[in-house]
Structures are given as structure tokens and as C-alpha cells.
Image 1: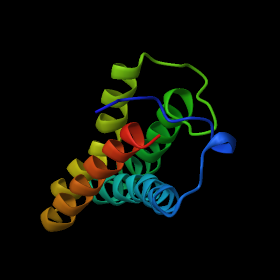
Image 2: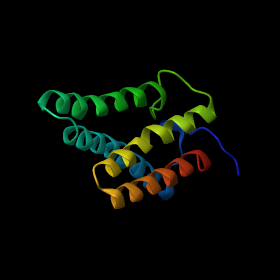
Image 3: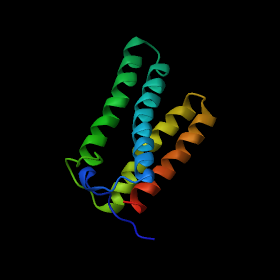
Length: 125
């Protein structure tokens, strides 16, 4: 098995698998933001902490994604192994957030889809 960094968007061959995977990956990214927002607004003991967590957690995830993982080219390129680990950690926080809010079955499905997506990302190009 060959592990390789995904190529630039414009140079990818858009096979049905690649299109399906791109849709899955984008859906997981949006799901991450939604899960973190849901967790944040449900956590905390007042309006201030809920707003801070509900808006801050998704914002932090979006900043990390843009700096290190953006599909169009991140601001800072990580070594391949670190990029895979950071992607799993950032997307994995969505599953943790869902589990923390009592949505364990959804967290398991989301986590499995994250594992499939990251595997496809680095093995199919």
C-alpha cells in the first residue's frame, strides 16, 4: 500500500470514487463544525461560557484546518505523518463531542466515516 499526500484539487482525476469521497470529506468537515457547536452550546453553566464554547470550538477547528489541512493548500505544510495524525485528531474531536453530548451511536458512525475518509484520502490520491 502506498501512502501519499493528496494532490492539488485542479490536478486530481475526478473518478466516481474521487467525487464521492470529496463529498464525504466535505460533509465530515461540516459535521465537525456542527458537532463542536452542538457540544459547546450544550456545555457550560451560563450564556457566556456557552457562547464561548459554542462559537469558539468550531472557530478553533476551522483555523486549525485552514492552517494545516486545507484542500486548496494549507498555509503551513506538515510532514505527511503529522498531517495524517492532525487530520485524525481534528476530525476525531467531532466524534468526541457527539459522544460527550450523549449521541454515542452517531459518534461511532461519524468516527468510522472519518477513518474511511482519511484512509481514502491518503491511499487513492
